[in-house]
Length: 365
Image 1 (spheres, rainbow, N blue to C red):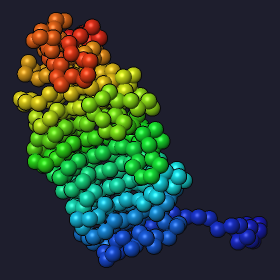
Image 2 (cartoon, rainbow, N blue to C red; image 1 turned 90 degrees about the vertical axis):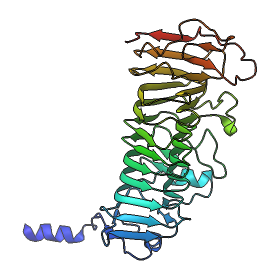
Image 3 (tube, one colour; image 1 turned 45 degrees about the vertical axis):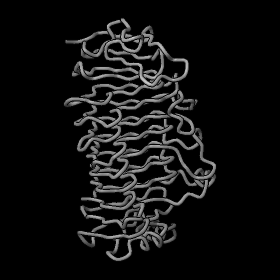
Image 4 (cartoon, rainbow, N blue to C red; image 1 turned 180 degrees about the vertical axis):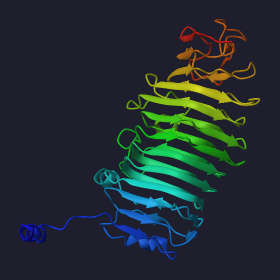
């Protein structure tokens, strides 16, 4: 019987096994360019510090785990870090099933970007410290159902974490979204030149929770938009963006323009739950152009804080929030102000504030 079993094993096809590869210290980019197709995990364990001057191009893979193993990766000024080359939307659709896990770097420093993921489904970025990138620490384009968790972004020159559509030939606001991506327990510590800490563009079902924006004053802590062609002076017209949710968001400074900017399609639901702004806010805490805005469980709000709208009849529900976050039901200041709500730089045809679509329920304090 034993001989028969052994003979059967010898005749059976070889069984595929997971394949680990240690990244050499010299020429990281060349190592990834020649990575065997059967590789399932690469480990940065040959040195405490790695350096790479160029882009690190990720190969197509059903799943590739990139384990930093506690190492530091220093990027050259023109590097986009871990990235993919996408020719056009047809190429993106053919390769979107690739999936990556990028984790456990003590830090990734410098470069234009640290993570520049394009055309992926179900990728994860976790347990990283990203320092001093000049364009964005993380840029997700057509990154469906991605997860970014336990990431510390420090001193980005422009943007911190960006979730958006593709920008290659053939990509549009309706065919290359980063839908249902989750950002969880991430912190952006802004520099004096930071524009947006968190940016979400043309993507539906994105969720941002348990995150922090602090450091120097940035232009926006959260910039949320589905305005076609970047026309922020118009109501967003993207018909495929339906919802966004933010919960337990902590802001530790005053933004330069507005803490949270919202320009979503009129039927899209935007829920902002348990937001805490610490300290005096010299800019609006919310700059609202369009979208059905739900403010929930905001237990701390002061009289100097204000919400700015650019349309006459904003759709805003305020539920379970501090009583200071209210309109008073009356419009004053020549038709431009009702409690915390201010009409400012109105869009054409929006001259007098109307609070008939603003509902305040279950006020606290």
